[in-house]
Length: 86
Image (cartoon, rainbow, N blue to C red; front, side, top):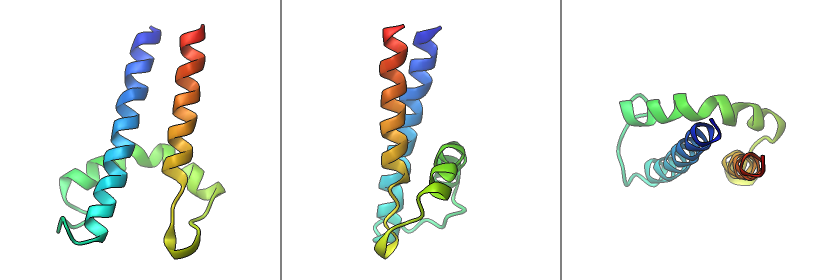
C-alpha cells in the first residue's frame, strides 16, 4: 500500500515539474500553445488541487514569481519520507 501511495506522489511530483517547465516555455514563447491546449490543460487539472490552496496562502511575489510548486514539492518529499519510515 505504501508503494502505491509513493508511486502516486512521484507521479504528482513529475506532473508539477512538467507544469512548471511548460509554463516557463509558454511564457517565453518557446512553445506556442494556448492554455486550452490538452497538454497544459491536463497538467493544470492534475496540479491545481495541490497548488491552489498553497497559492491562497502564499500569493505570487514580485514579477509574478509563484513559489507554490516549490512548497508543494517540499511537502510531497516530506510525506514520502514519513511514509517510508512507517
